[in-house]
Length: 401
Ligand code: ADP
Ligand code: ASP
Ligand code: MG
Image (cartoon, rainbow, N blue to C red; front, side, top):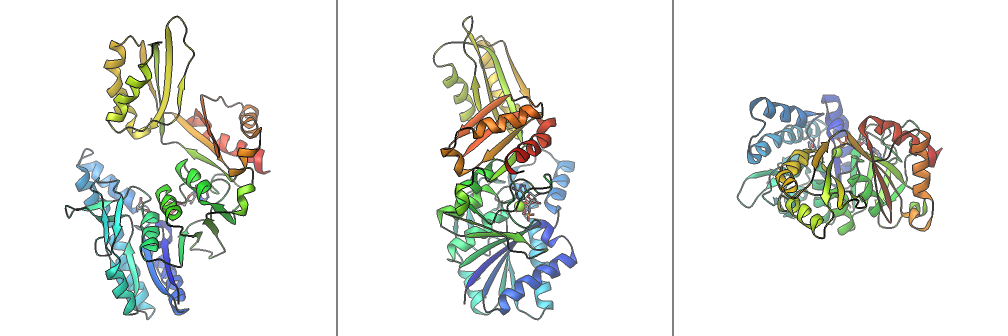
């Protein structure tokens, strides 16, 4: 007998028919003689509906209360799925995050999982139940409900798989696996049979939302093999694991991130220590900086541009404005209409010309590059947001057609 963790995202449980479909998948797995722990997300876009409700009342609501609200979506779906499983003649127990033993940090709306104590899940399994756990949520040491950040249910599933030494962790979603680009945006995107943790981590971090990046980080840390597959077709999916034969592929995918803003500080004095002072203002506010570009100095002045998450853009400008201007900078601009397009692949390390090929695709499509950043397994460019989809298609075509 194996222990299998199966996670189902919002689309997979969006309505009664879909919930019954999930109950069928889960009970089939149980009937084959396995212990089954199921992790579910809120139905459809219900979490967005809850965010809208908050915005109507108080956009600046405390993060504790935001979590109290956001965690409600998953409570509905676990109860409905447990009822659907009962209807098929099996025993099921639904558990909220805290009941399932999720202890998290107290950073509301982006809490980190500290520990999962799976004893209650274990007891329920021992009594031959299918256990249905609410994803995306836990409890802080102050006894408050927390959530893990959007898309966090993937991480809940991997955390249970790690804590219980599961034999398999399956992430069921609305596409048949991990593709070379978002299959909803790029028609001829190809499904990957396998992908390594490192490449998947980059793709997820750079905008491929099919897996939450923290879930991949955790899967790598605890060596949990993941399978990403469709709850609708049940076709063979993509395996995410340590070493993959795909590793020798030149690139494994193209990703797009539009949740990004560019800040440019112009006419900064070209003196030692200026970058240090500027970025320490931001790190004090816990604002992460991504791509950084500094111009060559001219006439004793230089320009520094960098990117941050869109949600932190204005805050970053506010943190810098007075200070930079009092130190001689001529201006500071915020541009929220940008997108980061990236290619990821472990194979590029040993191949010259990969970045050139990407730039050529952008040139052919007449798309201007604002910034560039590279590492051993990725190349990212910052471009105008209106060109984002066109850029992904052009780059994908260059590498995969
Ligand atoms: P779930 O609700 O099941 O967690 P998500 O919406 O979070 O599903 O993630 C699945 C979506 O990720 C797909 O519908 C697809 O549009 C998108 N996606 C983006 N990039 C990729 C990619 N490279 N491969 C597969 N899906 C991708
Ligand atoms: N329901 C949450 C969200 O929409 C968590 C998840 O889907 O993983 O972000
Ligand atoms: Mg998701």
